[in-house]
Image (cartoon, rainbow, N blue to C red; front, side, top):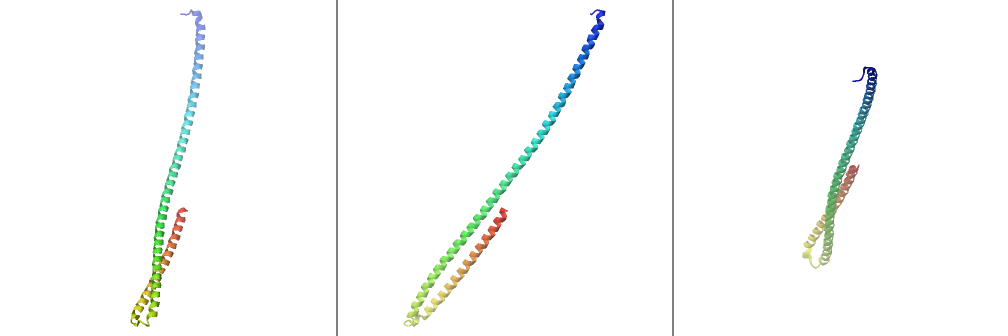
Length: 181
């Protein structure tokens, strides 16, 4: 135990040390509060930045989905236009083949008409000698008239087919322009 004469001095020293410890405790508490405040501020900043980043990522994902949908729509439109173009090409090919068949039939009919006309001329020259063949000449004339009628009918069909083809082509151009717009 310390002697009684040192007790006041010892009490004063203890009081000084107690005050120093209290100041250090206050200083540590202040630093702890500052650290806590700074950590809270950093956490708020990080949370805000995380939310901003998430919003940006969501917006980017939305744009990517939108671009993918647009690309899919464009691809579907391209397939549709290609299919329609292929169908029109087949129709045009069929029309052309039909027209070519009509042209061949017309040429054959004209050749047959020319042959019949030549035969008719020969029969007319021989009619003086062969009066009995007059009915045959009339038959040949009737056939010639029928062939001319058929050739005229096929020409009319060819003209209508060409007009239909032009109309379908115009409709296709209008529809294609509408789809592109």
